[in-house]
Image (tube, rainbow, N blue to C red; front, side, top):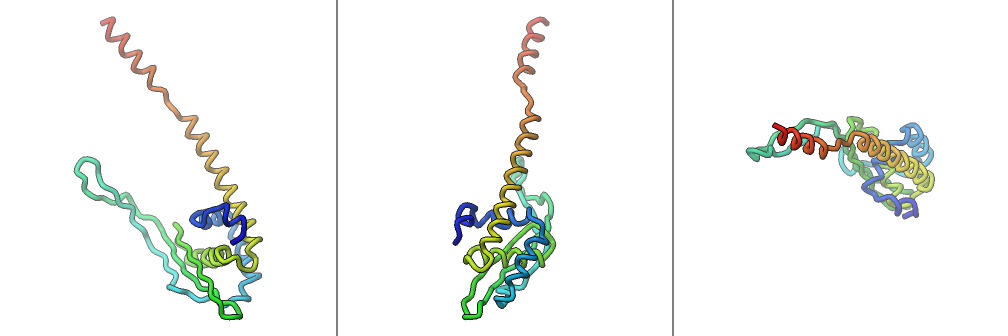
Length: 161
């Protein structure tokens, strides 16, 4: 496995690649995909996932809502007959995108052809994610409310009454 892939955990690869323009990923994969035969370990699927939780009072389960999900599991076979697997599961309704990202997963996990270029895209996506996380953290920090003064005011008012 290449050095970039060791820096970014595999569980974060799909998240990072989703932040890179799909056209760039597709162009890179199209350039090397002819070296492999692509087959599906399971049929790519799209559907809805359901988010369930328990209510805190009665401890009964209820559904918060639905979200789109796409899954793909691919096998790449090279000209020598060696096989390499990759998979992707993402919150999206595009099974073609899931298959494209599953091919990326196979290339990155097995250090195949174009892995270094794909790693560059991976780093770019991870950098974007970190920037978005910092922006969100800054926005969250600006909405902090200090309730300590609220309690102090009520005590003074109660004493004067």
